[in-house]
Image (cartoon, rainbow, N blue to C red; front, side):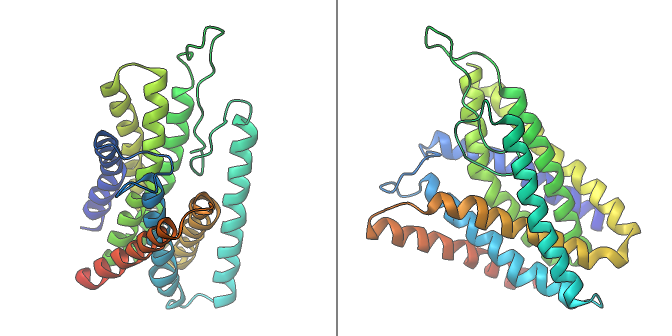
Length: 271
């Protein structure tokens, strides 16, 4: 039953986030700041940040601390995890820094605009680099979701929804890049969906690992928390730190609280 739930949730989070991103783009929601829109890219980032922080601090970490694992050891794993994801970002920036000009993600999600020819036309390249980064990150998301499910089904559901929430704005950026490197919009959607499907492979791998390393489950949860905290504080929230009007700032805070509220509501309903 756990395996079926993990595979279903990871497939839902991985591919569902891509399709939601495509739908929002079709409805006119932009990846860039759109303070005057009812729902803009900045609002989605706020919502995702709230969902990730609430999942980490209200669910994953408390679940880890309720185990027999030492509190100091868990905090140490949390710290090491944050540093690890920081270094992972640094490695990705160093590797792709020569071609990445537009910051828009994490763990391989710093979206690149394609190089341009002398005539101003974009070269049809760079798409596979985006898809590779997407696939690696989605694989990691699957492992984190599986770790949460192995601790508690309700926790797994919350983690899957939080992953989906923070992937939506990043997949919007992916689709923008791929549509610049190819005129076929349907092909771009299929490619990003396939990358999102790798989340399920990560879920299967995570289930296999955690099932054989049950004593390490609290530490897996701490690593998952470090990922969520790092993404929210180092990636999403800095994109929201702009000089905005009081109304736009209030909307950011409202969407942040909506993300926290979504996690709280799902938790109470699933409980």
